[in-house]
Image (cartoon, rainbow, N blue to C red; front, side):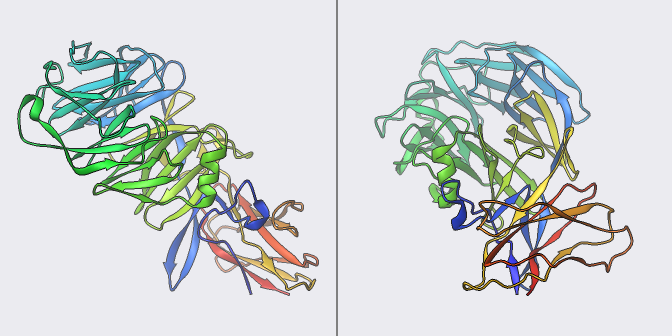
Length: 444
């Protein structure tokens, strides 16, 4: 008999007892023969600190990270050199894009172009209130803030913006939020809909055209709720669902549990990163842990900080060299790596099982055995049990993992009491990366 740690978090804040299963700061990975282990998420190591708080946007361009936050624009090298490039209008809705060695930033309704360490505000006649900036096919595309127009620079030159280089996303009666380039197509994300446009090969005002059937009735819930990854994007739609975006279509991937969080909490950003064959897309909330979708497995887990599982502070992400970096709401730019800390906080992992029912009987739970990668640390793992489907929990029962070099040691809890139903929770914050089997052996 086994107690299963199912493949994803399923705990609904509106109905915890229905399914208390939860994976926090860990996710399930296949190990062959239908078996799985629980693997830790990457920790965060502080790498640079901008002046002030809130990293608004961030991207890798020409071998550097460019980031906006605290009313200034920055560049960051892989060696950790942070340079303040100049003052900008600060805004929660900011985006950055490269174009043939130049860097374009949209923030606070203004457009900036960085050329050889000089920050310019180029003149643009089609509209003056800039909402976002994106690069596609040697064009930098900007959208109108609180409007429906979008425009593009002279080819390969974001310092020059011809007055006739614009069009209108008028397929539906709603305003633009931002644009995103995906696999050579330009997605214009609006309040209640989105449109897909392509580069025609024409010049000037004829450079872009909407594809046939390229108007869809799902928009973007908020400016920060979209992120790119290789070949696709991930977004939270105006319909309150999480979607993968690729090939001109939206694929809903959210579960009812995730959709409850989107409805009842405050989602603010989407962040993507990769780790050992997994692409992760996170919905970051202002008031609860992040929900993270694993594209490789189609399963969800949660990401939090500290022992009390407070919100994940990541807001944006970018890859530079071999590492992924996140810009955080505290102003830090942190590197994601295989560590057991989130900056100065321990990285605590927790796995909550589904409930094992005993058909109305009340047997004695004589043994629970966890299958842990033994012999690599002297740390410990804590066990908590619930007899009411995860509504309340008993005291922690801790067991050592180790000692180092003792690879055959077993982790067994004995004589745990009587239960009509039992839910198990494992919690660990170990100084070494420890993988756990995705189930517990039960002996009655």
